[in-house]
Length: 211
Image 1: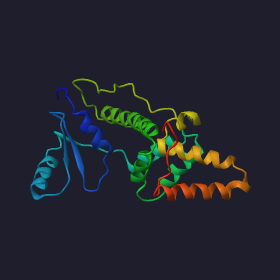
Image 2 (image 1 turned 135 degrees about the horizontal axis):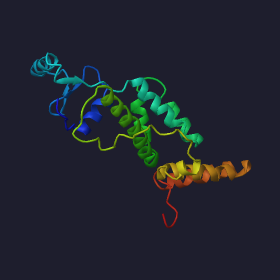
Image 3 (image 1 turned 90 degrees about the horizontal axis):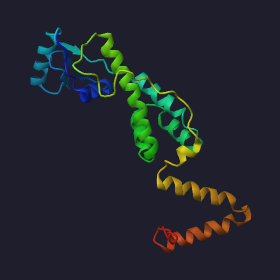
Image 4 (image 1 turned 60 degrees about the horizontal axis):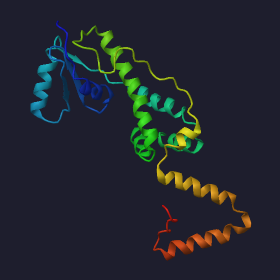
């Protein structure tokens, strides 16, 4: 069989997709990735035609959910910011962990981008191993190359994590630091003043000059 030009983007999606009843195949002649969702009779017929020709089509084995969950757990160990780490640990506890994890990281754009890079390295290493184990000849190497290794899970300095928090989160932490410095005997007065400002602005506290 001649070397094939794989649709790398579709293969990536197929390897991370674990939806129920969704099956993907790599066409060993064209390099295309076929995806079947089991939603129509016509699709089922085409799926059957693929399954009876397994010399041409290879079923793509996605990364098991438990392994993808471990990626999240390992990534969390790199976060040294206690507040952020605790919020993420709570988010991944129980059913729906993947969705809650993604939703939470929307509020931390820098950490979110680092997660995508971290997950990408794990995913690309998995794909390379999967292709190698099946002796698939490639017309050209994958865009990420063959020498991909999963990242070392080194803890990141808290300052790095904090610098990549959302603006809202930074402001909340600044406010908390200021409140922590107020003597206990003055807390009641401070709270009363903030409440007054909030009510005066219709629920909005005015921004200080220059913000």
